[in-house]
Amino acid sequence: MAAHRKPKQRPLGGPAARTAATLALAGAATATALDGAAHAAPRPTPATVKADVDRLYQEAEEATERYNGAKEKADQARSALDGLRDEAARRTARLNSARTALGSAAAAQYRSGGLDPAVQLALSSNPDQYLERAALAEHVGQRQAVAVASVQRELTEIGRLRAESTGRLADLKGHEAALGRHKSTVRTKLAAARSLLDRLTAEQRRAYEAQVAGRTGADAGTPAGDRADRFQPRGPVQAPNARAGQAVAFAYGALGKPYVWGATGPNAYDCSGLTQAAWRSAGVSLPRTTYSQINAGQRVSRSQLAPGDLVFFYSGISHVGLYIGGGKMIHAPRPGAPVRIAPLDEMPFAGATRVS
Image (tube, rainbow, N blue to C red; front, top):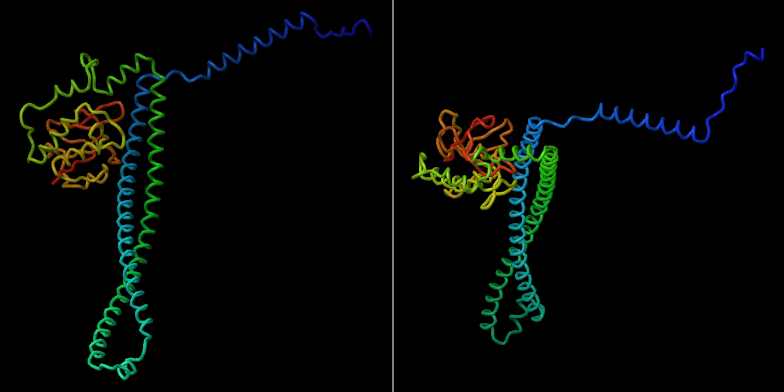
């Protein structure tokens, strides 16, 4: 029976053991590398990157308009709060003056002894002079009563102002908090877009940036300002009225200037900042955001568009341009794309407004 037993296998040792271990590690590393290669994400195509970046920039612009709205409300709340505080300070100064005057009158009464008028008349050596003084004292008393009533009114009004200031301060803090949230969203979206663009090759990146900036072919190496000069209208701007003409002329003058979110000029603009500045140059005050500018005039259909009209895009009304005729507009597109002329079909049309 012993002859049929399987001999025991001794564990490897020395060089043999080291060789086996090396082979095993090499095999494991190869398997891991193959497995990683099988699961590694393929490099995105330029078309995929462009689609994702376009989406991120649109979302950033939506957040930018919310930021602009929050900033407008914060500025209004801050201005109102400053006005209330100034008014409270003026009323407090008047209150202090009235209190000082009352204090002086009270001190004078104390020094006179505050005797009953009948006793003072009886003790007076000159009744006629006393009666004159009594009449004067009565007049002073009436003035004191008016002063006391004034003090009471000032106290009431100061209390009201302080209560209203407390409410305005709460509003301001709320708007500032929203401002911070929207600013963070914009920066996050823009950082994500830049990260995606960094995954392109240098050649792909140059081609993408040239496309975004509106440069193609011979224009690719031309500065934005030089290209803008080529598109300036020859002769007077055609528009329904002088104000619209001035707004359009201003927009032409902004061609080539960079897009900066939250900017209202004169060196850079975001989309609603450009349209606001253009119409401000014509003496018309527009609200700050796209979703408020669309309600700043009379709605018009696309077929009725005239130069100077505001044209809006996307379902959330997150982008605006200034119509210049011929199916084109001037707008501030997004970071990396300067103010330029573009066809209305470049983005999904959402509506138009004629500023009156």
